[in-house]
Length: 93
Image (cartoon, rainbow, N blue to C red; front, side, top):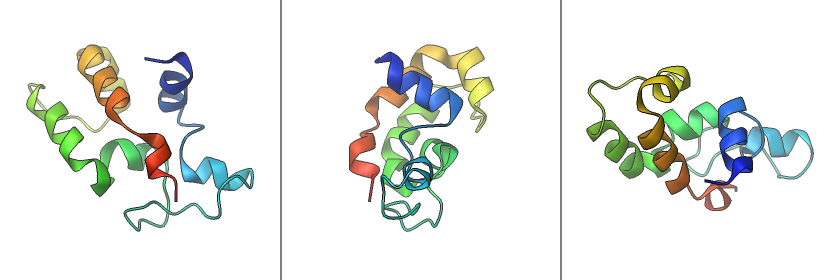
């Protein structure tokens, strides 16, 4: 996994429309799934565009947790595989 991608996901900055919009790099903060606010947490845990990838992640876990800290501490390898499966360029409106 690229260090930039991992850092952006872990610190919540970078490849989400909310951040891009803040710096006038995206027209608005909206997500492709029509959510008004595309934050990194929205991408990881809520975005309908990623339901299939998220289900694969959930199937590999003993119990689902929608907290990055839990996923990193308990399921680092499969969480990073999930992050790698996300096409962030495709999520930008």
